Length: 515
Image (cartoon, rainbow, N blue to C red):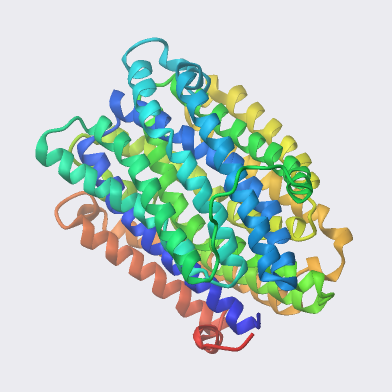
């Protein structure tokens, strides 16, 4: 893949992810209006986090980290060999997840307690158990979707895999509007929409895979020698995924002891996930198969260029996003969510969590960019060790500071753990040689990006002060739009003027190339 096509692939995945996240904003606005930040909201967010937690544990963050490089290697030799390997992996994963889902639904009270012991045994706990049993089968469909998405990405077909997550938000929006209109209980309605969305997502990528010429016809699950090797490689990544989820559990546990805190953290999480998804996930998805191909072919210079362009693309969009989330967190949360069941104190507390998450956003994105350096070399052990260290940082900060600063200790722990993980990934990549070091163009541009973002932050602070009466009164949506547009003009205007990025690079990235 040439640099032009690489950047174009970043933009393709990022564009579809942006569309999905914008639908997610609509979803979150509706949830804030109809669900608010009370008992039912806390219960639903815990219930929905369970299948998502295990999805990242088994599929996206672990299994695929080992599956994609192995599938890519076989695809370059023989499409038939790659298809047989994927077919065995698919049906082995499906059989395991069916058994696991049944067991988890039976043990749902224990899982809810592990996620939110602060719920006690009252209404929040009982609702979370009911919602969790309804929503949990989602893990089966979304994990199989993730495996198929890995196949599509390895063949250079990014659109279907990037677009499928939007179907979850479509299902949620439809459920919220229909439930509100019909007077259905919103918590039960949303929980029921989760597995429906999973079926839609799996169907979308299945259809795309068939168009790509692959068939995954049923085969009795079997543990072949290739799958044994896959599991051996995946095991450290699965354990690393487990460590990441322990961090999530620690945060939820800390928040569960404060009424409504899980909801505040969840709404803040949704906001910082927009740039993380659009940039970090997009770059990570494209880089893993690309680095695997380059390194296997011995193209060290090509691998270095891919990594450098990925980091440049990621930080050019992430650094200003982080600055904005810190500087104007309150106006963002207030305009988007403060209505209906979501009150002023909910907005204040959500904004506080958002600003802390925003400070960690570059770390969360760099984590997605640097991790493929290891996975492309089939090294899943090092990220596991680093994740353990980050888990300790998260637990010490979140639990240790909870009595002092309350629920925001959970957000602070997440942010500091993110920066700890990035430092370890960066330091650990030094023995990999020049392919793991950014090139001269990146080093020349990164300080210009930082300077442009700092100037934008000052401009946002001044604009927010000038627009304050509008931001918290009539016309607040237009005021926020003016604030965002003003910051965008300052950032890109100054960035172009001092050479942080060039319009010619963007035009070249969007042009079709060969490779």
